[in-house]
Amino acid sequence: MKFSIVALTLALATGTLAGDPSTLSNKTYTLYQAWDAGRMLWHYTFNVTSVSDSTPLKVAPTVPIYKFVLNASDDPHNTTQLSLIDFIPGDAGYSDLWQIVKVVVPQGLAVVKSIDQLNLLVTNKTATLYPTQIYVNCPVVGATSTLENPKDAEFVTGYYKGVNASWFDFGPNPNGNATAPLYHVNTPNGIVELTDTVPGDAGYSAFWNIFTYDASNSNVNFTSVTQLSNPTYAKTLANCPVTKVGPAVANGTTTTPSASPKSSAAVTLFPSGLLTVAVMMVLGATLGL
Ligand SMILES: *[C@@H]1O[C@H](CO)[C@@H](O)[C@H](O)[C@H]1NC(C)=O
Ligand SMILES: *[C@@H]1O[C@H](CO)[C@@H](O)[C@H](O)[C@H]1NC(C)=O
Ligand SMILES: *[C@@H]1O[C@H](CO)[C@@H](O)[C@H](O)[C@H]1NC(C)=O
Ligand SMILES: *[C@@H]1O[C@H](CO)[C@@H](O)[C@H](O)[C@H]1NC(C)=O
Ligand SMILES: *[C@@H]1O[C@H](CO)[C@@H](O)[C@H](O)[C@H]1NC(C)=O
Ligand SMILES: *[C@@H]1O[C@H](CO)[C@@H](O)[C@H](O)[C@H]1NC(C)=O
Ligand SMILES: *[C@@H]1O[C@H](CO)[C@@H](O)[C@H](O)[C@H]1NC(C)=O
Ligand SMILES: *[C@@H]1O[C@H](CO)[C@@H](O)[C@H](O)[C@H]1NC(C)=O
Ligand SMILES: *[C@@H]1O[C@H](CO)[C@@H](O)[C@H](O)[C@H]1NC(C)=O
Image 1 (cartoon, protein in one colour):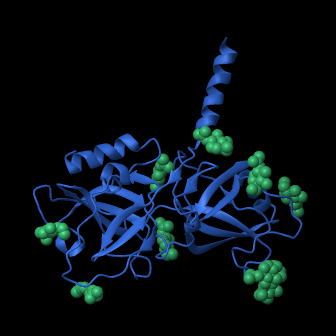
Image 2 (spheres, rainbow, N blue to C red):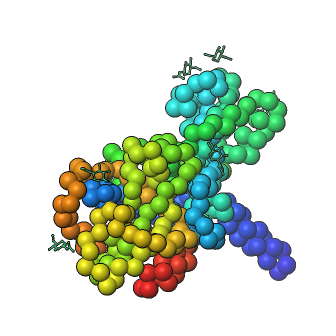
Image 3 (tube, protein in one colour):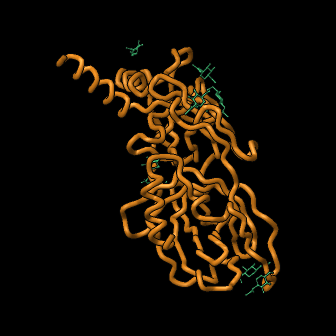
């Protein structure tokens, strides 16, 4: 009797400590539309996290991704085996943003599928770690997940605690681990999203501090952050890589924000996990939903 209770407790503890990639949901991630200075842009939404700090985060949290190479000067794509990670969604400390750590290994080394194995190799000096300042945006997802436009990111398989895990590789986040602001404007026609940075701009990052702005009694067509004053920080960090930007429009041109369901906060910021309720409560309170 006592034995089986102990065994059950251990089994549960292991399940909690080591996530199971086969429990991650498989879905097609869709694009959402936002505006930057009158231009339409489109982004995906991955991890949405409620944060405790009352000031916007300057940098997004990161975790390592290990890339195995023969020489520290090798390109991180020039690997000897699949990459290794130690966090998946649901694990405490998980982040979609990964710091590349090169692992220099001898030729012909047996495949390394877990951090425990890697640690042994580092301890006995078979492998050497070289952390880089390259941060890649790699949301871990279910093994058969897809993107609305599959060409937007590479679908990659790697190892996690001895088993396979899968992620979309959006490549290096253009501004390292820095964040950028994204504004959710509550209009009579639904939520309109505004930003002032897109890929190619100096300040662009896919890791957004979410701000909200109440315009529920306004008839303004919002297409630029210059139309906002004193937005409220929603204590939320969201990974929303922008993959498409429309043509610039002449200033003064009237553009009507799309009122499609995709631009509503509830859809746009729908997080894929345990934090759904917390995030919705934060946004709900802020937006008066
Ligand atoms: C997603 O698909 C993979 C591969 O078929 C499967 O192993 C996994 O269990 C699926 N996830 C869920 C939550 O069903
Ligand atoms: C690693 O690459 C550098 C630069 O190409 C080279 O000088 C060095 O000899 C290489 N080291 C090994 C162990 O191959
Ligand atoms: C790829 O790895 C091989 C073996 O270490 C090395 O000779 C070559 O220069 C590397 N290429 C790049 C682009 O790093
Ligand atoms: C989202 O990322 C945060 C850290 O940024 C992490 O604590 C949380 O577990 C992640 N949530 C999901 C559902 O992946
Ligand atoms: C280092 O540890 C690994 C894994 O335990 C083992 O395969 C390898 O032979 C060890 N190498 C040395 C030089 O001790
Ligand atoms: C953020 O990136 C900078 C520059 O690469 C680095 O110096 C710093 O340690 C990073 N901070 C965190 C919290 O990862
Ligand atoms: C793990 O991924 C590799 C590379 O995609 C694949 O060859 C292998 O069959 C996968 N293993 C399992 C158990 O799915
Ligand atoms: C918003 O756009 C609509 C459709 O183009 C237009 O009829 C309306 O006058 C615009 N409102 C303002 C305040 O510019
Ligand atoms: C519109 O005005 C902004 C700010 O004055 C400027 O940065 C942008 O280049 C202008 N766009 C066009 C298409 O003229």
